[in-house]
Amino acid sequence: MLFTKADFGPDFHWGVSTAAYQIEGAHEADGKGPSIWDTFSLKKRKIANNHNGNISCDFYNRYVDDIALMAQLHIPNYRFSIAWSRVFPQGKGEINQKGIDFYNRLINRCLELGIQPWITLYHWDLPEALEKKGGWTNREMVGWFSDYVACCIRHFGDRAKHWMVMNEPMVFTGAGYFLGVHAPGKKGIANFLSAAHHAALCQAEGGRIIRSTRGDCKVGTTFSYSHIEPYRDTEKDIIAAYKIDALLNRMFIEPLLGMGYPLKEVKILQRIENYYKQGDSALLAFDMDFAGMQNYTRELVSHAPFLPFIKAKIMKASKRNVEYSQMDWEIYPPSIYHALMRWGEYKDLKEIIVTENGAAFTDTCENGIVSDSRRVQYLQDYIAQVLLAKNKGVRVNGYFVWTLLDNFEWAEGFHPRFGLIHVNFDTQQRIVKDSGKWYSQLLRKENKFTTVESASEYPSTQPSDVFPGPRSSGGGRI
Ligand code: IFM
Image 1 (cartoon, rainbow, N blue to C red):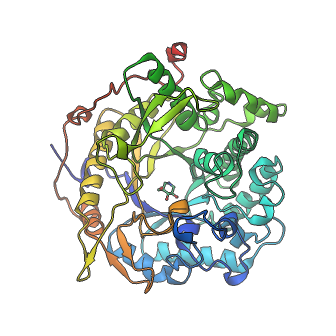
Image 2: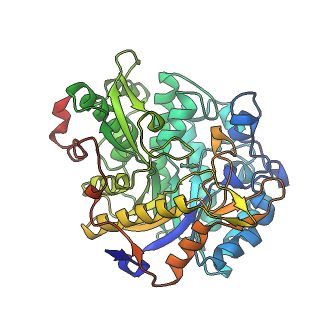
């Protein structure tokens, strides 16, 4: 079986994704206030090699050329995020007109070159001034966030027609407020649960504000999703995998769909009700136009009796004799197929867009050429699996590569390179990698690309369909 762009249909949205803190640099330019990532990355030993995003890809000053490069590659849709502290340096109150001007110029540049802007409102860079007031653990976040969303949709909604309220709430609350490995570096179950509940309220409220302000815009939000399997086919590992799946994959999407948090499956989550106010259950739900899926890998989970709260642990890919990327994420194309099939079972999900997928490899640049054949293979294989799911009737209608440019990969610094375009961080030179050329060809021509017949062509040592559908009778297994 071969695939072309045409197999996905004329309305399928192809694109690339980035995030403000990861590429913009210019951390103090034109009145921008500090974000939690500006301050966190300056602390010692928080980021690999003590890297920070102060300059990064200098996209703030180079966006004109970078968008031109995107247009040369025939990429029709560009997902980027707005840095909240460029717009509101103190998180709230007075607007910074120069911040608004920058995103106006960026949106206009995209449109001039025929590229549709897709805007993420929150991709983890909370204004530091709000963190000083407790950040996501403070319920006042709902009001601050609402004002920020209202400001952005008012200023940019006339031209930007696709909006995503948040990027991966599970990751920024889990890594930032439970494990302390991302900004703001807070730890513990109370910080996590309060942050998570307020983020879940904000994701729905953001949707309501966008819809009521501009009914002509499509509104969605994005979630991380890794296909999860038990490490061994034992009752204990199956239960452990089921809990991790509920926590990592279901905790934010199900309340949005009106299903509530998966409290029965992960008992510790029941403490989230300590942060409820009357009426919250209804406020958590909102009927988004689309949900963004961000899938990279699958995780194998084993029972871990000594780990607190959930008694389950993820087995590293590098210890499992499988192929893996610079992030230590297994390369396993059927993960995206299983993920999409699973979301396909959520009857109330109108449309799915794969808002991120991609891989970090150690690229080498020789004579101005980056031959990243592993990334080409990765993209080809994952996209083929998206088509398999689509052909089975899943309402998936878009695919965005993570990412356009090599950039600042959070706690890992600049070491992992995910880009379709290589960046020399000393000179800021850009070189389109072979994967960028490959993606461009897919988008431009009716080329045929080899694909696979079914997800089962990939050998799996584990039963891959151990989980019943979302919120079906499987809860009884625990
Ligand atoms: O770089 C991140 C991005 O910010 C959010 N999703 C996963 C990517 C790769 O780790």
